[in-house]
Image (cartoon, rainbow, N blue to C red; front, side):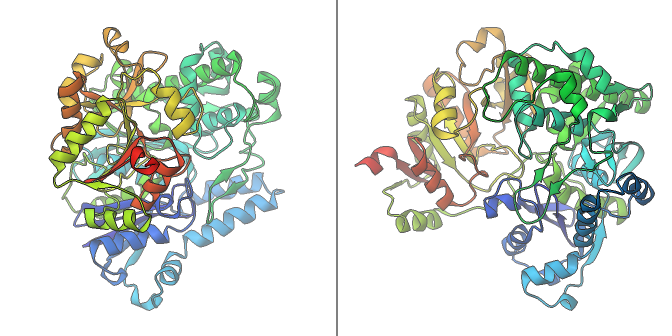
Length: 580
């Protein structure tokens, strides 16, 4: 049985293919179209999934989408009445709903097939139920509490459930317009980060400040005795005027969502080109601090209600890796699972898994520890790209030779673009589409931020660490498959790891396992033999663009930036080759 899951007409459009409950492939549309957070119909992602599996749309049994326009319809109608004078908002929402409900015709057009030939049944799965499913049905747990937290989707902003076996039972939710995601996004905009998906920049800026304004944040997001929260809506405009959003065929954009009252309370918003003052850093710290308080408030109530020790987490707010790293410290949960794509791209997987397990009643779950579900290329295909671009390269005969040469370059301080295997599904490069650097190189942060990534100087870099060395280098010991948690680096280790130690002594780690990422594991291990460090700095292989997907994009990124070399499969291109 084949199920095609999609996230469409929303930011981070994506597609995945599931066969008999197992994920065959998954990819975000942005990786192919080269537009960050691409919103619209994921036609290219769907084509990839079908072609990669060697099947056609005629072989698909079900098509699921992580949106359900019928969910909470009464609440949606009441909300629309509140915005009755905002005709543009209502028209945009109706247009979006119309597209969501006409998937089969859109698919037929994209694939150039007769709509009557598509036998698959279309199933709309509520947004947060898709999030819940993406986490629980991919987890190792037979039973777990589940929480989904994000901005909004199908008129909910958070959902609480219990998963057991092949079923998820939802028992509560937070209703829009009350939204922790809206709170965080509003301050993201206020701090001068205007683009969709910029919230992680606030998280990176927060450690440079002190949470001096938490008392004000507590007025804006109030904790409730029932384990939920509510917004003071007067600080926002989304509940009365709606939110101007661009979701179709391009880069998504959300217009300003904070009100004049928030400006009166916190002063002039920072423009995106304005320098950061200490006030901005303290404000970021306060937003992050209170966001964590709200998350732990909900989780502690969830744990007491369910009595369970396992928790699965998804949704955009659940991508807050700083909060994720504190869950075991701040709650009574003992085991945590977060999928590689906890944000909206993951609803493609979640909607398909909800269909397979919760609706069809199948019980063939798989513990997902790998994010390598995207495009892959052979050495011969890579060579063809290099030759067609007149790039001088050296091809090695084996992985062992390639690893030895790459480890030597890294030990000597080279900045390496590492392109291997399948593209990762999710926002993190996890050793297949990565830029790698010696973590002891003191100038690495400034070099990569300014000359390769071309981004804000305060942004941190992540350590990829061999799994067995985690307790030696970090204060917490856990599996972190998808770089989804931030832990404290042990104080005595920080001086030797300046490139991956953030200003507050933390690192957003990825634990590298030999059975999941054998080539990447062996590279780090060879680097350890040469340097004594079982860690590499790992950041995504891109330059203010989606992570590279195709060898041509890797070559182009290398030529635009100041990387010293790129390693594509077993082909190595060095800067010296180009200069010669």
